Length: 218
Image (cartoon, rainbow, N blue to C red; front, top):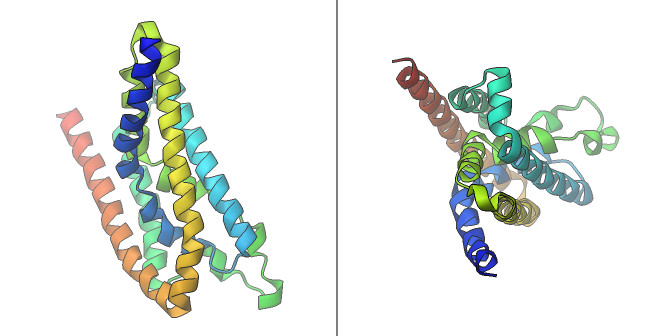
């Protein structure tokens, strides 16, 4: 009975440790830009899919992360730099146009097919929610699971990850309320501001990855 009580105590610790790295609020401007002309129902579907995909990605790296990295010869600095480059491209689009790919469909307003465009896996789930930092944290938790309670330890980490992805879902669903509150011009202003902040985050990702490369090679 005692191992289960101890496991319950670790679940919030896992969630608290992962949530600041995942930082769902940083995904909200990107979500608003990409789903600008989608219906409310499809926006909710995108939010749910992105959260579930993020959970699946982190769960996969929890169980298979070290094997995947070894199989493809990928390092965590490489994942960090790649994620930073992807975020940088998206941030530039937000900063200089205020719109994502979803807003550039060449069609009349009545014919726009944004509802058919799926951004939930990339870039919303990966690298935004389940980015290099989140993957590294989950893999670190997995490496600390005791060998004599491996199954229970994995369950604890998975529950903590699930709680974080549900917080992310709530944040993305709440983005619709934010969009109605700010209006179109307010959203454009926030999008450009957050595009700049995302640019800074991306540059930090890339710089950290390059630094880790240099340290590992030296």
